Length: 311
Image (cartoon, rainbow, N blue to C red; front, side):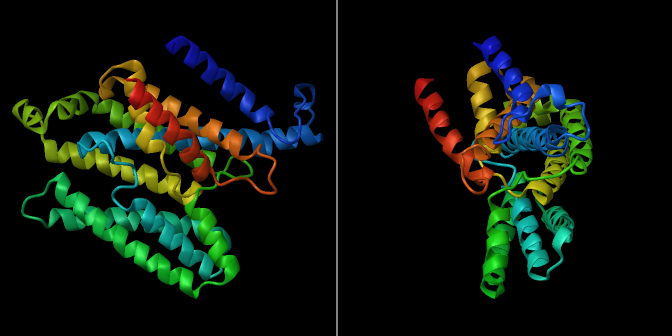
């Protein structure tokens, strides 16, 4: 079963750039003057890589958040990082800043991270619960501010803001890949470095403390690393929901192993899942691509429920 899933995943990744409304002929890929070459290397391949990296980061972020907060419903957006990025992107759209929207979104995400950890440190008893409460409060504030942004925006601006909130993987060229690839690599390095500590945290915070682990410090490092990576993702592709929630659970069910042993598989299959969703989103025959967040929910929710019932 596992081998079959791996083979199908690899086939999907290899085939995805060739599938679309325009058929790609492999014989013309090396001809730089052909339409096939331009579509493949400027649109299809970058988009597939973007989907893979975004899906991997979000899935891994979900694993860390669920482990640190000890809540199976936690997602990489739990602390309000995505809400901050969305609000600042909306401000950029309303101000007519165009291509600066991604930069504004990243600033909003990083500002949220700074506020989160700055406020949480002021508590006499710093723990994950206080951080979670601060994140929830910020999310409500950002949501209210976003409603104000909607009320003062034009019809076109409201449409652009709404599209951003549903996720968008449409890119041209490898510029965003050169940002996301190092981000994903650094996140993997940090999490793999703290794999043993994560295993102790999954047992219980009390057990980890008895083993001499500085639980507060490790939690802060892991959450900070994920929050920064998620901030980069949201600034580029928007808040794509459901990936960080379901992929860690699905992999735990399929592999029947503890989360600390599934770091690389969760990253890989998170990427494969989003590549599949993007493949569906851009091949439904509609005038425009279906928002990727809609597809992730339609595909993920029923499959997740099926696995829970079956197991």
